[in-house]
Image (cartoon, rainbow, N blue to C red):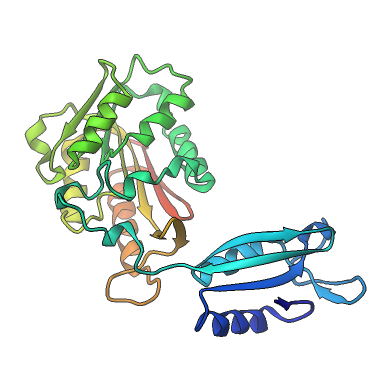
Length: 307
């Protein structure tokens, strides 16, 4: 097992990358971050020998950029042993073969197991977006790509179950996900539709004063810009609000990795993501909306009317 003391991060990354070329798992011994509460990562600390101090987050970030899952195999007062297990880049819900390809995100899919509400960065930014749009004042909420209705669950918690005065509408192409959502929210003011978002006009839904869509509008089956403009023009009330979540991450196995990745790149390249985000931002600003961008693994665009 390699022990790191005062090696630079450049040296550590080179070592780890070389080891992972021919190994599926690498173990290292490093300084326990708990030895100090006052040091910045990269500062020198002297015990029996000289060490470069690094926080636990540094090692977690290293694991992510190396496409590994990190475990703490042992820990004591001064040291901890870390194990980095290489992720299988082909193991992703995007590559899952299902009997029914139209139910790629349904209850039998790997995607359905993902609970974004247990990701603190996602949850915190989504809750802040709900507060920003004053969710307590909304009367009609439309969620496109509802899946298992996680976003409605957060609204329920945010409003302390005071949902009776809000009319909820959720649309998804997955029939099994819609059935799950119906069972999760079996209330008269919750409405779920198994329908193609491209044909949303067919549902004849009431205009919403809050439009939510997390990780859906950029789907390859949708014409993103035309659909977005149609939603604002025809499905949002004159002074309604918008919360959009743009994925800036991908799943490898059961680990989330930061950075959107286009199919024609071998690395994270985010031009398409930011192009879409800025298109929405500029369009909404032209329509007299105040627009904010927040988030990490998901970029949250939140828009409120200033008319």
